[in-house]
Length: 331
Image 1 (cartoon, one colour):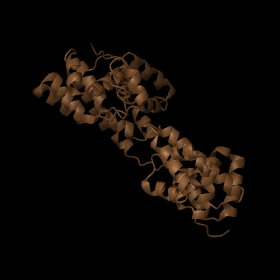
Image 2 (cartoon, one colour):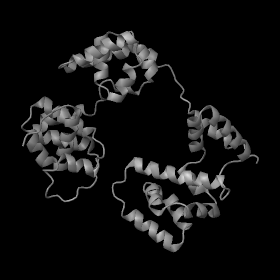
Image 3 (tube, rainbow, N blue to C red):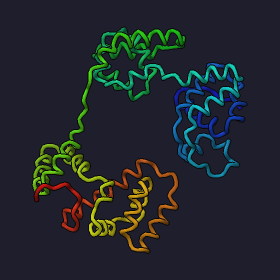
Image 4 (cartoon, rainbow, N blue to C red):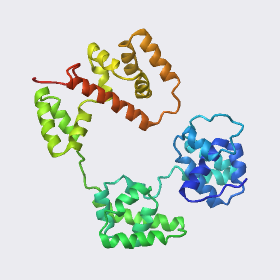
């Protein structure tokens, strides 16, 4: 079997396959590749995060027929990648390439900078240098910078990106060093990011329930979206733990067991214990059974379930059935 280094989606699939096979069999496959291909795949393996069971099955279906149901593939990290390089290329060369994995990714400092400040600095640079920098960033970060460049520059830089071919590592390092030295002063500009809804929620939590409701109604007239974000910040799923027992019991009676199980699946034990302590013995057993059968819950599913619980809590408060915890100064 031959592993082919293809564009990003193909590299990810190849990395998943290598990790799932383990170092011995993966190294056997890598011996059929040239050094540049091995380097690319090792880098992909080193940055590979947790992989869902569905993606494992879809990617290595033919290779895992006898493995049964695969679980979540743990993040292999640099240790696995270094071992892979040594087994595939030998001790000396594999170790040398493994040490390169400890170096920061090219232009990583640019991805961590404030996009507006970085784009301002890049706007004065040659299109070729900017194209090379953006080509080494994650697509989302690169897109943020590209779209912030002056309109005329966007086309020139995009054209240079499309025309990029092989770049020698020494050239890459020289361009990166020069670019960084020229725009580092711009990047040092401190930008303080303010979470408006969270800030307003902090103020309203101390304004009293009636005043808080009136202010939110006024915000909703101007911007329903901002009002909703502020309500989200006023009471979160973690705040469920702070509800007094009667209110929590009222809330729990109104939430489906399956939704609650998903919402609690990644919560600290203290919150889970608090919830279980406010359920009847039968309801607590049912909830634990629901949680026991959960497998591979996605973060988006957890967030959706928690939002649902909070929505129920808000509705019950509107009906006067419970009181959500706030640091009220007055009513």
